[in-house]
Structures are given as C-alpha cells and as structure tokens.
Length: 367
Image 1 (cartoon, rainbow, N blue to C red):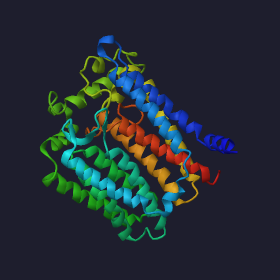
Image 2: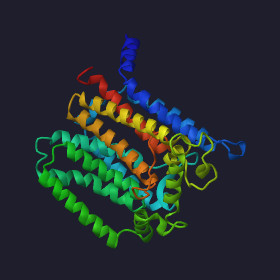
Image 3: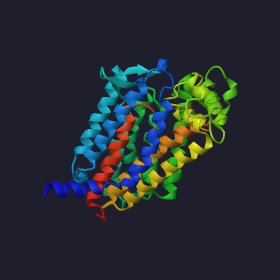
Image 4: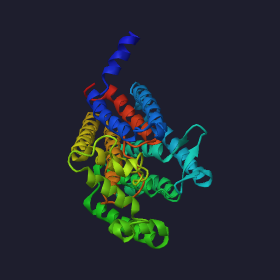
C-alpha cells in the first residue's frame, strides 16, 4: 500500500516541466566543459555534483505535503532567522569579487540570498492569500513591502545589487497578480523612482554608478568598466547563426570573456552555438515557465497559485537580467543564468522551489 502511494505521488511530478530544463543543464555543462587537459575539470565536476544534489532535493520535496505552510507561523520564524543570517553575513561573510555574499563552509561556499528568495516567495504567497480581497487597500502593499525592505537593504549593502533587484522584482510581480489597483501601481512606481534617485545621489558607490554609465555607452571605457560588457557583446555577435562550434569560442576559451562559467555563460554559449542554440535555450525557458504557470493555475488555493507564479517570476527575473546584461541592454549585475551557470546555491534553490511546486500537485484541483 505504501509502495503504491509513493508510486502514485512520483507519477504526479510534471515530467514535461522536468524535461524542459534538462537541455538547459546540458547546455551549461558543455559550455564549461574543458576542451584541453591542461584546463582541468574543476568547475565541470563540481557542477555535476551540484546537479545530482539538486535532483535529490527536487524529488524529495515533491513527496512532501506542503499544505502545513498555509496555517502556521513557521514562515515568519524562518523570515526572522533569514534576516539575522543576512546581518551576520554582512559582518563576517567571505568577500568574493568585492561582495561579502558568501559563507565559507570549508568544502563549499553558500550564498544565503538565493534560498531567501524562495522564502520571500512563500511569505508573500501566504500574506496575499489571506488578504486577496483587501489587496486594494494600500496599507497591504506597504506591509508586504516590509518583507522586502530588510533583506533587500542587507543584500544591497554587501554589495549585491543583482540579488537586491530580484527581491524587489519578485515583490512587484506578486503584488501585480494579487489585484493591485492602477492608482496604487502608479504610486508604487513613483516611490521606486524617488528611491532610485535618492540611492543614486547618496547610496550607490562610485563603481556602481560607473556600471550604469558604461551600460549606456560601453565604449566609454573599453579597457576598464566597459570591458566585460564589450567582450560579452563581441562573443554573442561572433556566434552568428550557427556558432563557432563546441570548444571554438575564442572569447571564452582564450579568457577574453571573464567569468564565462557564471556571469557570462549565456555569451559563451551563444558564441559556440550561435542564434540557433540561443533560440533553443529561449524555447526551453518559455516552455518551462508555461508549465510552471500551468501547475500554478491548478493550485488548490491562492497560496499554491501565488507560489507558482512567484517561482515563475524568480526564474524569469534571473533569465531576463542575465541575458540582458550579456547582450548589453541591461547593466551588469552578476546574476546567474538559471540551470546553466556554475554554482550550487542558485541551482539548489530553484530545484527546491520546483520540488515544492510538485509537492503541491498532490492536492491540486486536478489531483
């Protein structure tokens, strides 16, 4: 009997959704795979391990009944712990590439901002579920914004502008689908403009302002702040329609393109696989988002629906910001490409979120 229940629960996993991100995992692996023995396979081998761990978490979470989250104070407790973790990280975190965003755990490093994004989605889904009828009242927008201000500020001060932007965009996307009025939406946009202007004058550091200015014109400083953006655009453009072929990407393989396994993996992939490969990647992401929203639509309550939408916003935000900065149409923020970029924190977080979504299918409307 137990075996049959487990089998039924296992079969309720959305295998079309699962199939959509497997090519993306493969695209990331072949892009970071060393072409010569002298390069070593450190990143490739560790990424394979992270993918295996992520799949285990995905399948384990898909077997859990997550309905207990809707009627408990557990999420608020976890939120409080998360804020404390970010505060400790700000004080003693390991500095990598100028940002204190990591805890060094000897064998690997952890970036807390990624799992906290998932927690924020759960907290907002719970908050808006209980107040979806009253969401037209502006005070609920302000209260929900409180859950974003603290973690966003602490992450921004690390400084990690990219993750702080994802926090805000997740909140903005979820209040939009929760039924915010147009009048209040305009007020939120006005407040965001005021905050940006204030940050530009009093908060942003010189190098962060320089990134924005160079984004407007990378040729302004081609050997300095504009170097990364310029090399990324060269890599994408040189791929043309069919690409240069696996292992023949000169920008990445000859180290002209920095951080090609993480921040600029899309550019490295586009150089070797061209427009054809890029369109396949875009299709996989589009199909994945469609399947996530399809599962969200079938949620038992607004909590499951809002959570699914939040996961879709989370993945799309990373995808859009990463590809945008690689193509030179958005400032460089250092965000990973979901499923493709090297790194365990983001990979595990996304798989955990999708696993929770699969677990919610157990009691969905079509279960």
